Length: 299
Image 1 (spheres, rainbow, N blue to C red):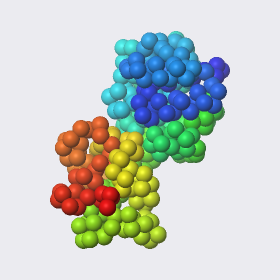
Image 2: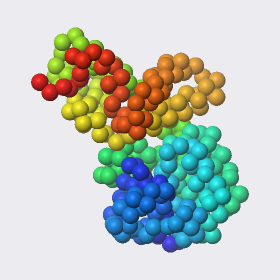
Image 3: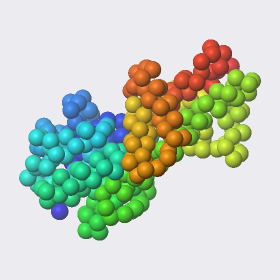
């Protein structure tokens, strides 16, 4: 099989994934609606395609990283979707689109003899740029044999969580629900600590040496909140979408997720309160309602 791989979706995450594959010395064809993003990858040696369908005419394997279930469906099965490509055989979905959307796309692609590999990633653009992403994969053995060299080229860790499309999405939704819920709680409680008179840096240092530590306090606070840079990589829009997806999928299973639902509402309100593309670490500003209660403000 041709080792050239196609990449669709070159935003913060998708672009970093494609760059990692390029750095590994592989031939790469890319497509994005943004000519600027395609030009950036082309400058690094990638070949630019004119459409998703054109890309699917030229490669056996396509990796997609897209912002929503609707975008993933259009790229896979739309009029100019990869399903109409003459060459593509495997479609690796790295986006977080939920269980049902994944199953629907997989079923649609199967009608064109295209195997979907459910393979969402975790770690954010920073980890992607360092080749440290975690990939959760659901694929039958034959498809995994073909896709694993590609996925391992841009991942630091890869876990095969099942054979059926949708299982990796379920795992990713659990991960993101925990991550985003923890970040919201960390922001809320950190603002309380500062309002009570604690130094933000000292408080986070204590938490990280104690039982309250989490990825939010260990990674996101030092990297993007305490310094007020708000540049961790993901957007408020994406965070709100992912947590809403978890709630939707859990409720479809008849589960009581009232706690997570309330946190999903917080993210939804934050999305509506400002630029939805702003960094998701700006969530802390949702709680900083008094001018003198600012977490990480320089002394």
